[in-house]
Amino acid sequence: MGQVEHHLILDPMTGLLEECGDTGVVVVDGESCFAALVDVLGHGPEARQSAIVAEEFLPGCAGEGLTQSLRGLHDKLRRGRGAVVTLLDLDLESGELLVAGIGNITTRIFGAEHTRVLSRDGIVGYSMSTPREQRFRLRSGDVVLLYSDGIRESFEAHDCPGLLAGSAKEIAERVMRSFRKGDDDASCLVLRYNK
Ligand SMILES: [Mn+2]
Image (tube, rainbow, N blue to C red; front, side):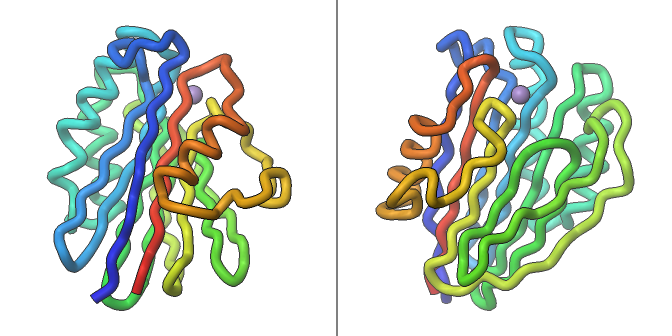
């Protein structure tokens, strides 16, 4: 059975978690890993309220299907500000990865090839296109990186020598340190699959 090593960093623009609209969830149940990264529009205490709604709802979505989970979150966030969201589900035995995103969370896979996963347009809780689940196959050692638009979207691995070295925590800290923009909440979720 494969394993997944993961690390999430939330870095609020104001330095206060209670004013952070970015959040993430990881649930590992032994056979699979469900993960989410969420960026509620804007920042501050009101954004944090919607982030809390997502934090409370998403752990129960593990194993429920990504499209259904996005639809459920869409309903939950209707009274708040709306958010951009990417969900993924990784089968630890096979390395099969499903990803579904709405809005501009960046999702990248660093494996034998480097892949950017396209999201659909929209805002969860406000106006959401039909989710699309995309399928990938991870190999042992591959790294999946998700980050919000508080981090420079377009950096390349060669912009940061050793980007993928070390633990998931070290990778997340390196991305945050090197590419954080500073004008918004920032979040970064790193997963490394080990067969
Ligand atoms: Mn943002």
